[in-house]
Every structure is written in C-alpha cells, then in structure tokens.
Image (cartoon, rainbow, N blue to C red; front, side, top):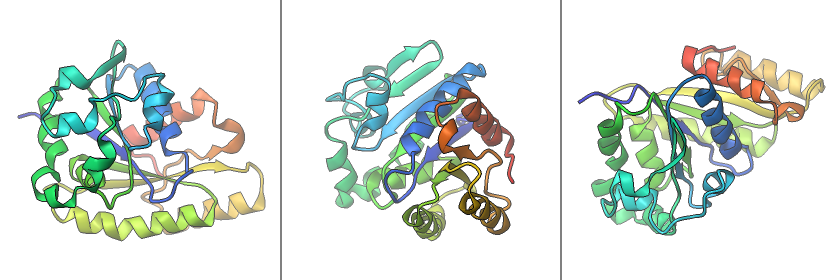
Length: 236
C-alpha cells in the first residue's frame, strides 16, 4: 500500500500560538502551489472548521476514526484539490477515552494510506498531545510543526512537548521530522531579534527559515514561504 508522502501535524501544548491560523493558511498556500491537500480538524474547539465557514458537524473526524462513517461521508470539498474533514460534536469524548487508546491510538495511521493517491499532503490541526487525538496525530504524521510565539508559556509548551513526542515516537516505524516556526513576533524589537538568534542557536536543524511577524500574519506570501520551508526542509 502506498503511503501518503507528507502528513504534517500542527501542534503546541499551549493555546493562542496561532496553530489553527497557520494550518488554514498553509493549506491555502500549498493549494495555490498546485498541491492537492487534505485538512483534518482534530481539535475539539473546531476553530479550523469554522475558519473555512463550515459548521461543526455531527459526523466528522471522530466518526471516521471510529468507523461509524466513511471518508466520503465526512469529507467536505472546499474547492478542487482542497478537502476538509471537520471537527464533530463527539471529538472531545473521543479524545478523552483512554480505555480505547490501544484500539484507536493508531487508527489514523491505518486509514490515511487508503487515500494516498488522492492528495499530495495532509495537514492536521491538533489538540494537545496527551489525548487520544494527539497520539493518533504523532503516529500518523511524517512531520510535526510546532508554532512558537515570544510568550514564555508558548516556549515552555514547546520544550515540554519535545520529550513527549520522542516517547510517543518510540511506537513508530519511521523517524518523525519535527519543525519549529516562530510566529507573531514584533518586527524590529530587540526581544524578537534575541529570541530568533537563540532559537537558531539551539535548534538550527529544526527552526524553519521563515519568521512570521505580527504585521505580516495576513500576508499570503509569508505562508507561501513557510510552505516552501516545509517542502524543502529549509531551516535557519
């Protein structure tokens, strides 16, 4: 069975780091570059689903993972070559069902290869890594993208995630590529410059080249550049 070439999970332990905004804009950027993209909203808050003007559905990601609905029944075509599986109303319950972790913990990695021929890339907008959804994302992904803002809690969340990712990755057959992205930094500030320099020093092979500044978050060219970073593995 052919594997999906790239499955990119966007995740951070802390809220308000812009992961959903990055996921939506990456999907658009990759689609504009001629890639066919499948996007999964795996966060019970369903912000990604709403960002595409799709109402939260009774049947979405969790219904598909449980085998209650088929891919065709839960997927929504946003435009030619861009498809969304929305968050659904049972996603929170699915995420918290630790007793079924052995049964459903690698469900996504089992299902995705069946759709390898339809998409060039899959993007996962993820909840925290500790739940069942997070485990599914880590086991299914080829890449993880961790957005980091200048906030201390976001930095700590990223640092806390790295050992957890390594631990969960022990159950994988292939190595997981982990990327970091600096997001919403104040352009021209001493703090932003020092943070960027520090991150490049500590994570030279993980930190992507593109820095997203506060003033540029609405610029499509920034996400075109970030998409190229991910496709080519361009780091600082």
